[in-house]
Structure formats: structure tokens, C-alpha cells
Image (tube, rainbow, N blue to C red; front, side, top):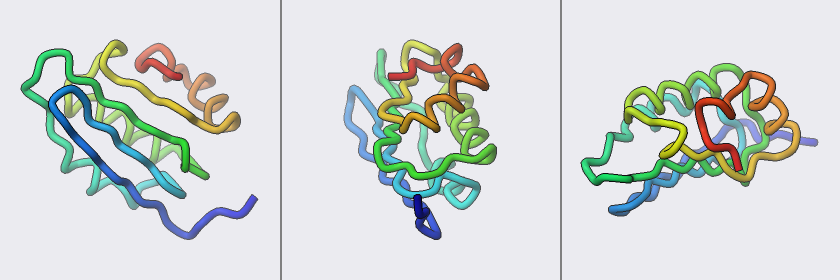
Length: 104
């Protein structure tokens, strides 16, 4: 498997959800992009971290996910991590992210 040199985060937002799509590598280089995401004032707003195109996730990437959860006052009910590749999903389960996020 070949990894791209960098990653990209694309954020789309509407009244009911914010979708954070991570492409390529998810590491400390994406910190500033995630820091710009603000909590919604809409009730029942969901934050979806879509890892469909994520090739690599390291501890700094996991830290960024945790930081996002804190900055938007997220809960397991409104924070979703979806479409992780099998290796990344195993990592998330090993560090028990499934206790803090809904992992689909």
C-alpha cells in the first residue's frame, strides 16, 4: 500500500450535520483545519468523521479526533466515525474509540 505525502480535510455543514471527510493521511498537518470547526447551535446536530478515503491514521490524528469531540462538546450519540478501512477500524477499537464515538 502506498500512502500519499499529505492529507486533506473537506468539511461540509448544514443545519443537521457537519461532515468531515479525511483524504490521504490523517495526522498533525490537519490540526489547523479541524480547529476551525465550531459547535453548532442546532439541537441534535451530528458530527460525522468520514474515513472512506483515509489511508493512514496515527496517534496525532486520533488526538485531533478527540480534540474535535471536546471542542464541539460531542457525545457518543452525536459523534460518528464511519467507513474506516479494516486496519484503521481495528486501531480505533483497540484504543476504545467505540466507547466515545459511534463507529460505523
